Picture 1: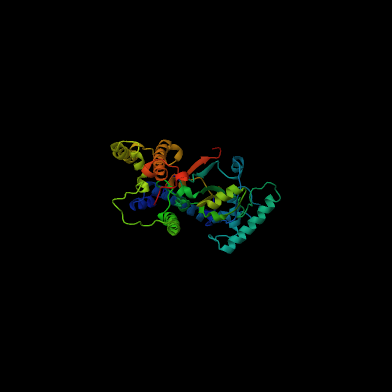
Picture 2 (picture 1 turned 120 degrees about the vertical axis):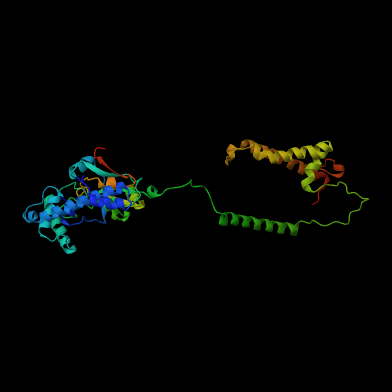
Length: 114
Length: 277
């Protein structure tokens, strides 16, 4: 089971570096094949997903947590963003409670291949 | 996972007037948390078994379990304990993956787990702003219009002042009914009409043509309903107005400068200027 089962809380960092990974990498590194996705245009920043997640693995963060990125475009995008969503795929159990809770249908559960 | 819901929570939320969707999600989350609490109560005994020396392998859950084992039944760790756990995990991680090329991200920031978090999305500000109505190309009267109007006012005043100093426009002697000046000219702005009178019957030159012109001007907004503000789309009306202006300007200039005694044609550079303000 995950960290929260032990009364622990996943840690959040403030010096993330954004790197592009391919689907292959993602599949090898994290557990199930299904992943939570978020459509930023639909997000209303209500943080209901954070609130409802039993694993405390999805966070809405200030863009300031992005310390570095692999390209200037991505960094600019991060700097101008209203919020950055980070998920810990190893804590996430794909229970999809956040998908169900999301009031604007911004969250979805999809497969890596997609 | 999480198919069962906490009926109590669900009923409470429904009673509070929450939507079914919110209630279901929260009730599911509550059920999951409850389940987890139960498991947590059973687990400490199992967790005490794995030796702290065994290398962390497999997924993060096990590695976390190993680290947590050293905390015994502590449950929630203090920050110091957590730091210690992170430190241990980092060491373990380095031993495990040390020197591997192509490692993505500075990993193992956290308790023996793979600590690459996935960026779910970056929400651009446009995503949460609802734009009502189209942005218009609009500026405020103050200061944009007022300032340029003020500058124009000052320029005209200065020009008039200079003109008043240098251009003589005297009041003449009392009019003598027995002595009509020759030529007798109208004010400059009527010289166009006066010029027309030389060519047409007074009824045509004095009434018909001006009436047609004025009615035509008044009719322009009804006839030309082109909404475009771009000059290249308004050729017809621009040509029409230019013709109108040039027509009157030529008549006024001819009447003012090229008519001498008896309103006969004169060349101003030959016969002198028969024009007074």
